[in-house]
Length: 426
Ligand SMILES: *Cc1c(COP(=O)(O)O)cnc(C)c1O
Image (cartoon, rainbow, N blue to C red; front, side, top):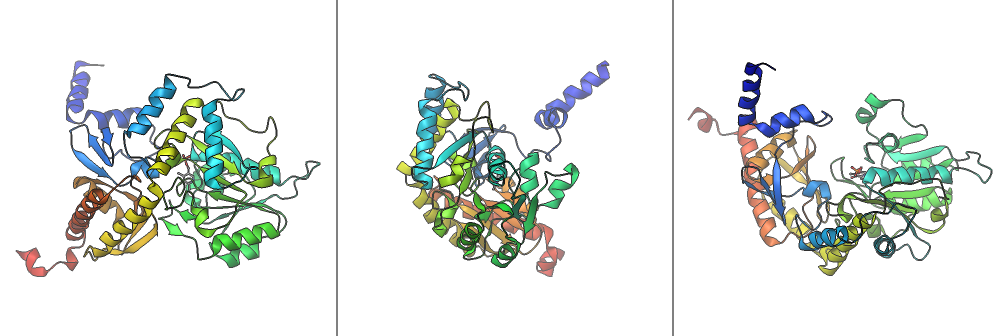
């Protein structure tokens, strides 16, 4: 390297060292990072310059207790100082305790079983393999080669879960996909029409989070339960984004009062610690047999202890009720914002989609960040909100103020046609 090279590197570094580091050292599988966060507390984040942000994304519905919650900190520290990992040749008390808790919260009854992985995709990979096992007869013949999933639903980015994800633009660079998956319109009629006795499973999100917080049609889960049961197919509900209390119930399917064959969870159950799980109900729990699946880290003592503490705190502080109450307050606050950009809200509890009349979600996200508010563009016409479940009136009021100012800024900057001509000429 010449001295001129060295100089230009250090000069650039002085201007924006972290952007350069990120551009040089990280794979380019996502776009430019939007900020460098160094610290968090509750619903707030601080960047490297000391600016404070209200975090209404929570790491995409992950940090359910908010940042640096004392219960989380204590659980990580205590378990790290006790026992972190022993492999799945062995059990630990924290793993058994979390399995029992997840069974209780999901309402599986005694026959429920839990498989632990480390992410949502891993939970769905396990569910995919569960579906394949269900599709074989006793002699190993594949009698149910078909798996159904919904168009525009999201189930993960690994090769198995990508095959379940009904977004052609995500699959296209990685073709060919694992075979057997068919994508349906999200209607009861489409399900009724597609279903037969060669279907192993239907995968469904109670609310399609990545698609822009889109609810299923009224009665869909109830009908899906009846139709899958009639044909002997598994109903597998992806609760990775909707679980851990986010919608005001422990899991989204519980609003419909059904019993699925399996659910997958991740995101909010660890409040920032990477953990995922497949939870089976009834006979589906007998499908896996020794040697059929595994994960070195899955169900480690550290992650399971943290998730137990997180779920314990969600229960103790009744954050399900808080999700409902504050979710309603957020929706009311948005309804009260006088912006021609806002078309309305979708979602349940503290999983909220703000529908926009114009494809300006990216600009709204950027303007919000400039105003000290973190939100997300689920697509170009939807802002997704998934704040920590611990938010109170103060955070919601601050959100309303910052969000309305961000919307105002975008409206003024991007849609000058709507502005008063006298203002423009002035
Ligand atoms: C986030 C998400 C996943 C994937 O989880 P990862 O932890 O990113 O692998 C799968 N399904 C749904 C519904 C999700 O929201």
